[in-house]
Length: 512
Image (cartoon, rainbow, N blue to C red; front, side):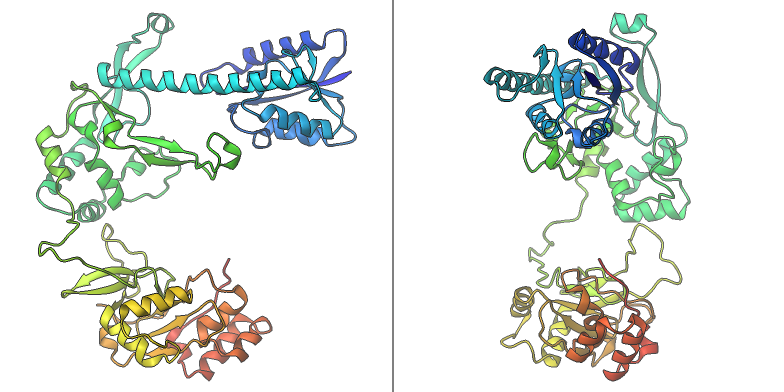
């Protein structure tokens, strides 16, 4: 018989692919000795056993080759069950291969696996649970050991050093065998280039400056951000600048007090079925509760900020409730879209009343560009007044609460521009453009500009969106949306509805 060999190792940085492949293929050759020979090999380096075969490069290639009638092998053999499978993955792969007329041979079965044999089914179940148990047991032991090393020994457990520090040699490895191999420990030490910036950040925070203001000042001073300063460890952050989150992360990092900290975050694979990575939506980093952090009791590296100053910096934050005790409510949050850039308007409390604004992506952490478009601003009271007065398709609406409820029920949004507003719905009801009676209330602190408009309301039908976004939803234009080009449609609709095309400068863009 002709066999295809499959092998795998979990990592390439801590395992030797050559030696691991050698012993796996030797074990596989013992299984097929006297009954065939291995003619082709598939080996996955750096693939976790919990990852399904269809997501492993070489395993997926093997499955594709098995489905080919002109394949060059009759069966698949592995050197060890745990190298290839975990949980119930083995049975799924065996059924897939059997559908192609290909057997799977295992050392534990001393030959081909037969799913019709009760003993083989029980063997696969036991091996799958054992493989999964080994993963969980190893994970628990490693995490417990790392927590103890950080908390009791203050050891640096790898990863990028925090901004303001650099890694230096700390002597031989504490494990004698590892030390005999020449491995060394590392610890954090002050980076003379970036440490002054960290101290300045904490000083500004203690003086009452906001995180956004600190970031803006750093950008104006042309101070390289952490991603720019350490390009080797941040190859994915091209042309990075200081942001509010970057400053906030520095201010919240207790490692600047000189103590080692571990387990601040974990990776969530977002599995619909826990433990089944085939249902994963992709990994994301999630913050652990502070009670789960492993923090060393003693200082293990030079501190850039004292304990008292660090604690004081944590207490400086925006108040959840204003000083007068009143609650600020924004009833139209999520229902207002910017006609200029398609972003949702954010709530903004000004002059003792709720309002909404869009800064077109501008943040307080970066200096405003001279040619930046004007901000769109609407007070809530003025917005509700204009919508109710100019739109007869809102029966029973008498205030902001009923307007918000009506919009949500109809799956509609209000598209706000610097000089106009309109309602955009997901049904076939007419959309009435509303011209602002007094533009001084709707225009932000800058002059009106022209630019490409895009509503960004992605729930509308893509065929009618081009017409509705530009004309208000008249049925003739909606029906003609598929026949006319976007530019022709825009011009004709705007002119028919009485809009100044040169003033709005709108151009519909295809949306997904």
